[in-house]
Image 1 (cartoon, rainbow, N blue to C red):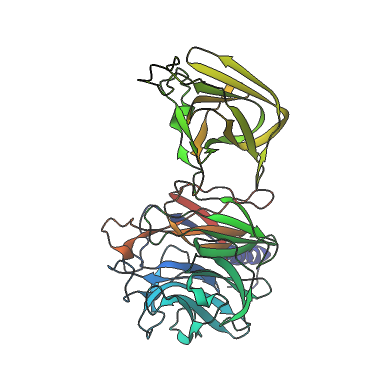
Image 2 (image 1 turned 180 degrees about the horizontal axis):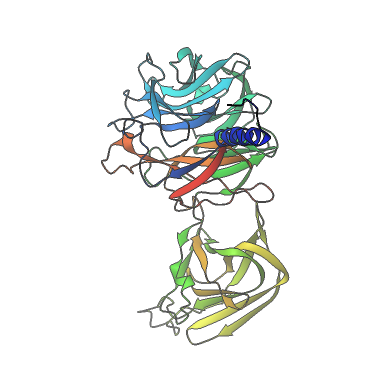
Length: 485
């Protein structure tokens, strides 16, 4: 046989080599939220309130194992699983084999390029709720880790230390975002170059009554996601988004991507105008509730019709001296605000017309300028009764269908979109750039009622608006993405 190497053979070999490299460099994965995640032995992964992070092309899932406990016992311990594809998980073992007796939560591991050490931070309680932070290091991502300091001093150590998150910036500076036990105050501190202690530089309180914060960076903007305390709540927590141009200070609240704005208002989306269906708005502490309308796509808002039912005013039954059986119905004034990526802005009205019927009044609002928006808030501002009944809202002469409409009030919005407590935001490397995955523990989701078997929800890549704000999430049972190695 001749040993001559023909050009077409070289081409085929080069093509196979390039194809092999491309298949290794890029990998498509499918994430399912429908079933519990299993390890290679077919057992449910018991790793909660930690993080998934990538080291040298491999994913490591750090979490707290709860087993059959209620989560408030000294049986809690830290575990690690690893995977090439976020689907098939190998159990690596216990991270802190000789942990002091206490109650343990929130393990987070980062890598220090300068020292070559993997650094584990954790929140633990020698006695509930005497919270403090511990730090341990290892030469390998799967451990075991050796404790360096089990009582790291922070600026706010005196009022107790709770949930936290770690973030390493592009310049390799590391930060910790954490909340206190007292008032659950959220703030950010810079870590030392070894990542094993705080430099005791604190940016100040960003929010209160929050926990489970997670930081990341995208297009030179720093993000901190956190929400109200949950404590293993089955209904889940939200995800308040704070954005800044600096890592420790200057954060602005831009909305909650994991809470509906209020109670669903079904009666306003079925076209009923006869008064037999309506949504009741009430006056709480002299501040009226309103409704928020979310459109399928941005619409140029020019005109609003608000249909009011006037036929069920409270009676003055028994007061024969009062000639009026029902209180007088005085048509309310309304304010209208539209959403502009990161804040609500009230729109100016051009005209305000009222059309009265037997049991209804129709208020038509026209605005000075057409405003392009996908969300609208309508609030009554002046009204004589304690309740107001709306039957329909029409936008630009067309019934506002299909829309999602919610009754909004004061305080915490009602229901999380994803009934999970936030644990981490994972940055994934893809051919199109980094994608960010929101992760949360679905407490109480295990069909066998074993806490260690509760599911985690992993969102599809978060979507960002032109100015960097994050769009609200939605439940997705299965999604796919291409990974870069």
